[in-house]
Amino acid sequence: MLLQCPECGYTLSQHSAQCPRCGCPNYALINRKKKLKRKEDNNYWCDEQEEKLDEKIFHHIWKTFVHSLLLIGFFVCGWIFKYKFGYDVEVNGIWMEIAAFIVTGEMLMWLIYCILTGGVIVGVLAFFVTMLPFAQFDGADPKTWQIVLAIIVFGGIFLVIFLTPVLHLKKVFEYSRKKKHIRRISYSEEEYAELRTMEEVLPNGK
Image 1 (cartoon, rainbow, N blue to C red):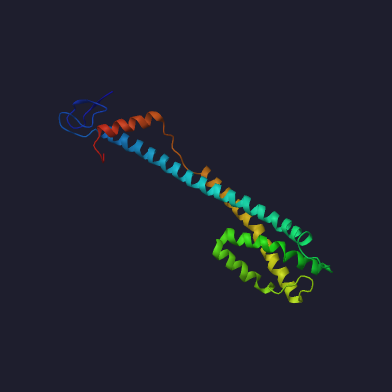
Image 2: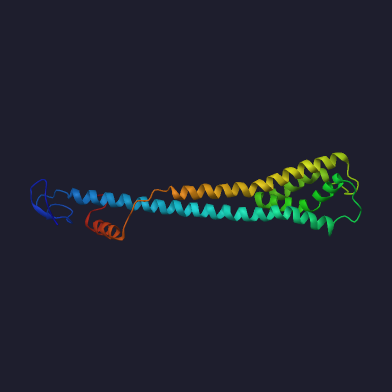
C-alpha cells in the first residue's frame, strides 16, 4: 500500500520510516507502532499479574489444606493421647474429662500451629508462653482455675485453628475474582510480527 507524504506529496510505501524526498516522518507508521506497543505491554502486564495471582492462590490453597489437617488433628490427637497414651488414672466428671482431653493431645496441635505460623523460634516461644499456666497441671486433680483457664485458652486455640483455613480459603476466592477482572486486549501473532518489523524500520523512541 502506498501513502502520500503530507509535506511534499511524494508517494511512499506504508513501511517507509520517512519520506525519501523531504524526510518527513511517516506518522501513520509511527502511530501504528505505538498502538501495537501499548497492546503488547498491556498483555505482558496481564501475564505478570496472572502469574503473581496464581502463586498467591497456590500458597493459600496449600495453607488451607495444611490447617484443615491440623483442625482434624486437633481432635484426633486429643483422643489418641488421652485414651491410648494418656492418663492411667480415672478422671471423674465432665469438666475433668474436658481438662484431661485438652491438656494432652491439643498441646501437640498448638505447638505445630505456632511453628507453622510463626516459625520455629517464635512458634516455640509462643507455645511455652501460652502453656505456662498449665506447667503444674497433674491431670487427675487440677485446680479449678486451671480447668477454667484451660477451657478458655484451648477454646480460643480451637477457634483460631478453625478460622485460619477459612481465611485462607477466602483469599483463594478473592484472588480468583481478581484474575477474572484482569483486562486483556486481543494481541495476535500477526500483530507481534508486524511490531517486530516496525522496530527494525523505525529508530528507537519512535
